[in-house]
Image (tube, rainbow, N blue to C red):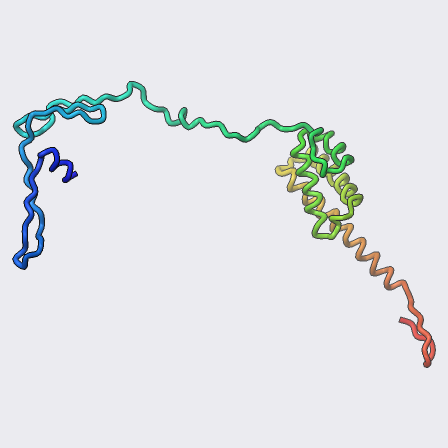
Length: 199
């Protein structure tokens, strides 16, 4: 601003020196400004020659104010329509798709339900048993739909995952107990030099 004021002739700069010869502080003296009209950025200001105070300021401004809520109305590029059940991904088995499409009409919901089946099957090592996943998915889906109709379920996907997890856990423990009983029931007989021994 000092440079601009100096260019316009508004002030004079006096450089001072200290007693040791180094530069000291600058002294600025404001000059009386001559009667001129300055036009910058749509404003017209005329200065009086006596004290340099603007007499009249004309500001050119638009008549309408800008409404920020209206200008910030940028549409998202996201699609909001839902695809019907017939557009469900091929990753979802046809049997599960048909049962789920009776109650849920959009493809995204059916795909998410099947992903919950896969997620719940994984910790119990059933991720490769497609028949078991479909069976448990059917039973859990029926239970979830009944619960939605009878009582207030806030999060259907969370509820469905909980039912699936319990069913897969039960299947897992059934397999473990069957394996234990089959090992206990078998008797191994060895004939050795000292006679017959059983394990």
